[in-house]
Amino acid sequence: MARKSFVQLQQDLLTAFPDNITGLITPAILRGFLDSFLQAIRPAYGLVSRSNATAQVVTSTDAPLVFDSGYVSDVPDFVATPVTGTLQRVDAGTTRMTLNATMEGANGRLVSMTLYKNGVPTAWKASVTLAGAGKPVDVSMYSLTYDGSPAAYQMRVKCDTASESISFSNMDFFAESVPVNAY
Image (tube, rainbow, N blue to C red):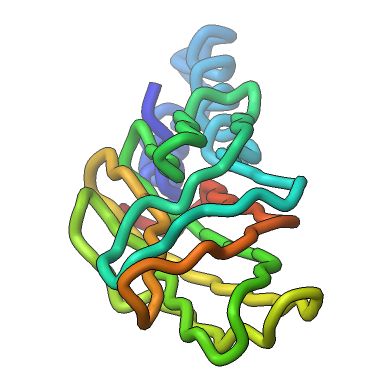
């Protein structure tokens, strides 16, 4: 069942729960409304992660950022695919995303990460200049997006040179469902 917005729940409340002078409010109606309410506010998330330092060859063209593990909440709102750095939301809704990463590579190299939605780059980007071997640099990116239908989010990375080996660690790409007033 798809999440309902708070406006939809308010409408359901007004139509399903008239004054009960004629016995129109039944246990089944009450259970159905409470189930919809709980689904609207339940936490749901998807996460792809890479904890150990792993080198990835990065070129001057956006390519998927590779992760080594994926997790989803027990609520089936997301599908996590670590090898492509993809988190797919399986229904409409508002999604808050966070990327945190530590990287090392050649001094002065500019590394850029871009959030893609359904295969198209978004305005959400983060760039960092590397400081050299043994000098880790951290980067974080936050975004919030609404989708009227299922959507796939992917982190892609590129470098200012044709080919550069960059070590990524402590990396998490996290997406969570955000309850909203209206869809």
